[in-house]
Length: 481
Image (cartoon, rainbow, N blue to C red; front, side):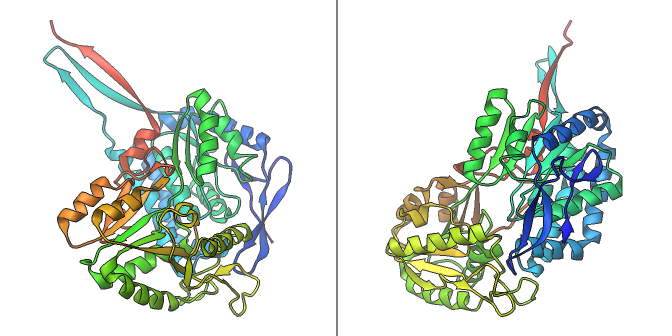
């Protein structure tokens, strides 16, 4: 049994209460590790460490911060195989996916912000020969980074890297469902000599750790990725003390397919955008709108492609659909499949629990395609976050735009068309923070990332993240006679 530890003030330690939570391997449905069930006293200790470390860390040169982040990046790359295996066991995702996407992206996050801070420039404004204004950007102080279970190390580093690069100290709270790689990153930080208190990692349940962290008087900003419900609670706790907060929350993303698309490329990419990471990515295109003239062809071809996806042990190289992250989330997905049936949906394929040979006690669901539902039913409006997609026909551009925008979420959208004018017209009108045209999940780390409506507040990525983790101060100097 692996015993995971908190990382506070440069020391790996158990929670003050010595209480622990079970960590499950979802592919076998069994406990394989224990994680601290931390409470307010652990948060107080971590915040105190971050507060103590802040003056010296914020005073370091950007070159020094760059060097520390690069050391962490190289250490992640050096342990690619070990971290990928840990992520696969902890989360249930296919090992090849963790090895090719999650862990390399974690290293890239550290490397990107290590170099971005070297290029982060302030602004200057001259006033007609009378004066000049320039902007100083200063770190905020101790900040909180709260990350989810679906892309554990990927999104954990996505938050802490810009915070550290900008000169803040961090108290980070990873998901208690998938804590392993955050723990392993703590060990890496010790190995590379990151000063004590600069990064603190506190494990535990959200109500005992994340909620306390969000309301703490010494935490100056909160970067959160997770559910809309928890994001709303964080906003309520942060607002009275005027903390900065960035909330990246849910998605119910439209994938809009016009008849003039590059059909073969669209089909392969739509398969990936539907079921990657068991559909447990906030950017997955879970509502597929298809122009009527190709609807029947698409339905046949897409169901056939879906039938070829192997469900099973995430360690196997030919498995495309791994395990659902937890029993609670498995139950939620199955609830929505039943709801779809009640709402008149037809299960074209999947819709069932799967018990792969050798992993009969794990939590697996076959990739599921549903049609026959109204575009505005609950199944099509509520986030399922699993290997479940619906397909909906449409006639006109205006019709599909209205259906796509009738959505409480506004994170991402995908548009498939070879008509450049239509692509630009649709992209400008669709209510989403990121729009992909003839591609999906093609990310440039320099670009702003985030959503609108129930999908979030604020933007991450590139200089947007560095702006979030700094406070601007205007300096005005009069030089006229």
